[in-house]
Image 1: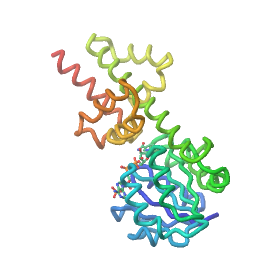
Image 2 (image 1 turned 30 degrees about the horizontal axis):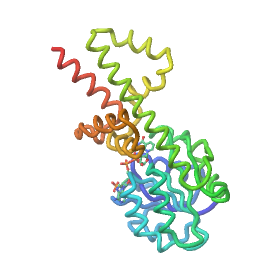
Image 3 (image 1 turned 180 degrees about the vertical axis):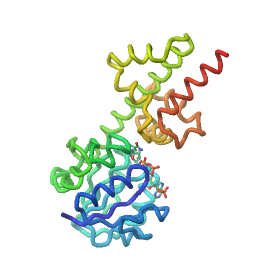
Length: 267
Ligand SMILES: NC(=O)c1ccc[n+]([C@@H]2O[C@H](COP(=O)([O-])OP(=O)(O)OC[C@H]3O[C@@H](n4cnc5c(N)ncnc54)[C@H](OP(=O)(O)O)[C@@H]3O)[C@@H](O)[C@H]2O)c1
């Protein structure tokens, strides 16, 4: 097993790093804000974290975070190191990162589907893009975290993640609005949920009413913006960004807010 440097111990990164340790990987961890992981071998210096590591894993909020971390460590990486970025940042940011790496350093983009529960249990879906040799080298690490789906060349995992998550977030927003309409009509919530949930929207309904996921509204808005899509996704991004008070709450709380607003307006 290769020595791993794991950078980024947020909602997802911390349980993922713990999972890698639990399955027997040797790892050194770093987070911008220290003190997140007393149970892991942590350092306050990202350069120290990557020194001697064969595989560097990053799980950071967005492309700004990735660029900042890359600015600190890229020049320190030695040929033969493999960087596996699991943040959801889109293919442009992956290409930018690839351009910063010293020659001989490989890169796999491997963003994930699934929230904090699957992150802790190894139940994520990992969308892996990169040179086949690099994806195969990353596989033992990625397979400990979930089901690996090879997507093709560099940036393809990041691209597919944008596609899938923007469809999910957009779908959740639409289902949320439909639930608000049902509330406005005075339909019993169980009746609406029962009928919606027995059709093709079952998965979106479950996500829209989840109490287990922890995917902040600010990150959902970031993902929809990455898609830079058509009118529907633009409206969804605007709706998500219009609720700064929910920025750090799970996406399902955005649905709760839509429904509460309709109920309040009906009074
Ligand atoms: N939460 C989910 O359910 C979920 C599911 C699938 C994919 N994702 C994606 O996975 C990534 C991580 O998500 P998360 O939920 O773990 O986010 P999070 O809880 O907000 O954690 C973000 C991490 O990025 C670090 N960070 C932010 N800005 C930084 C900067 N400028 N320099 C260095 N580090 C910085 C944070 O460090 P600090 O602790 O110092 O702030 C933290 O470690 C995101 O791209 C997200 O879209 C999330």
